[in-house]
Structures are given as C-alpha cells and as structure tokens.
Image 1 (cartoon, rainbow, N blue to C red):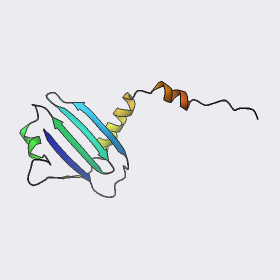
Image 2: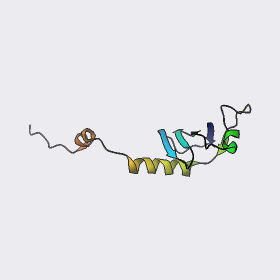
Image 3: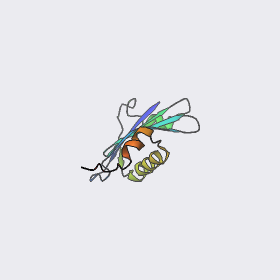
Length: 103
C-alpha cells in the first residue's frame, strides 16, 4: 500500500471536491480523492511497486509531498466520473420542469 499526497501550486483554480474514485491498474487498485488543490492517491494491492512505496506519505519518514500542476489529471477524472454516473430516478423526476399551477 502507498499513499501519495500532491499539492498544487497557488493560485488553485480547480476549487472542487471529488469523492474517492477507484481505478483498476493491472496489478493493484488506485483510489483518488481531491479537494481544492490537494490530491490524495492511495494504491492498494500486491502489485504496488517499490517506486510507489518510496513516495508513500504514511510510511516514508521524510513525508514526501509532490508539488506541481496536476489540474489536467483532476479534470480528466471529473469528466470520467460524470460520464459514467448513474442518475437516480427520483432525482430525474425532481429535476423535470413542473407545470405552472393556475392561481
């Protein structure tokens, strides 16, 4: 397991929140969690390599934090999540325009 922490350089333009999102790599699972300029990436499974483990915020005594601009990656995950999101029927019903009630 490896937990990586990435922080965007200011000014952060992507003010948003992304609930944990799972991707499947060939030999392990990866979870992303984003909140306004901070990206947490948790890699879990036997296939997590030594390179990822070295960058682990939790187990590396140096507590490495990656600093850079990863807004394109965050936007890609947002687009992927929204494209595959299922709409609940009750929400669709609620969002439908309603007829005006005569007074």
